[in-house]
Length: 85
Image 1: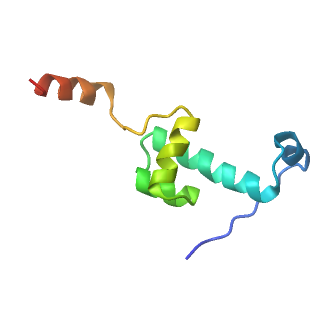
Image 2: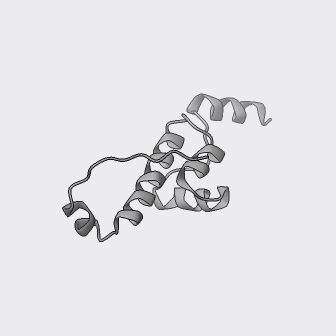
């Protein structure tokens, strides 16, 4: 099941970005999913679903946005390193 959302965008947006409305919508979904994943709000699996991609495709897309596929806080990383010995 899916839900359709509708919102207005200035026509100039599409030509400025050199994207069709459909390409723009797909890019917007991906950008939102990447940001929410980066913030730790959603999992990779949920982000991939939102973006309309497989999990592998989503992980590949993270590199385009310079976002790590790993969600570790500084504290978690320090703790992992401490426990590694």
